[in-house]
Image 1 (cartoon, one colour):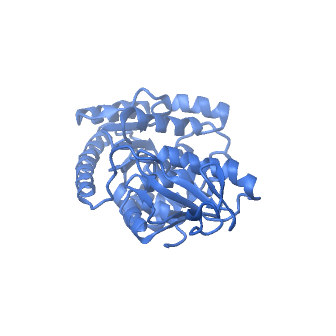
Image 2 (cartoon, one colour):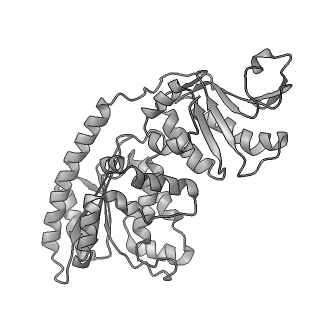
Image 3 (cartoon, one colour):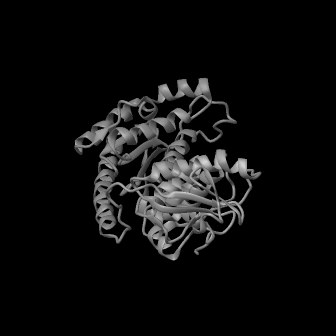
Length: 358
């Protein structure tokens, strides 16, 4: 999956909307018109006033990716939009912009979302020029003032600031100024120049990514890895069943209270293995011992765990979204598997969950 050739355009200025739409199409590129939360300000206002919730925008962004098999080539949006919300819900009139950027950060860490980056183009007044110049030079600063109620998502946002070189590689910022004269023609010409740069940048980025020595994704069907948890020196758990260690010597080598993934944890088995982990933590482990959200949980990926290039991005989104309520969950890979993770998409974000190497 990669960035497609579609643009999302969200502006309250209807004349400008028409002019910028024409500029996009003049470059033989497409404009999103089917998903109202990504193209219709009036629709967004109507839903937000009723629900006070931006989940429908995030869902639309996800649907966009599924529908067009990739992220938008560019997002053009008013820097500030009055959504008719109470001041405490949208004090700086930037709720829509923040929602789209946060959604992009989450979804860009999903499995198979490769060769993707965000080109953000903000429409603003000359009063915002100094701020825009800062963001154009250091786009990662846009994420500095974004916070959510989810600590794992906040960690993803913080990484955008902590690793500026990586952010700049995958995220660009540009701007279009509209003053009281409402010069639509100049705005259209500026967008055409920006689009030329974006298209060139996209191809250069893809070329670089394709030549990197990334961990390969294994093809074919494999038996899903087993989940093993040694309860004590006498008992061990494996895939939903309890075994006697004395009668099953293979469990003796495992450390107690550690979760081991043994076998293929690769592209064709990710869903099954993730479900095993989820079931164990939510249903089976609480029957074995008392746990809460702060309980330390360590998942071991030693050399008996076979991973590929899809494992890291899958674990990243799995930990950040599905297992987000667990505050103290860690991965402990072998040096070999750490090396494979390091050369896979999503490693920088996943690195926060890696406690140490075996």
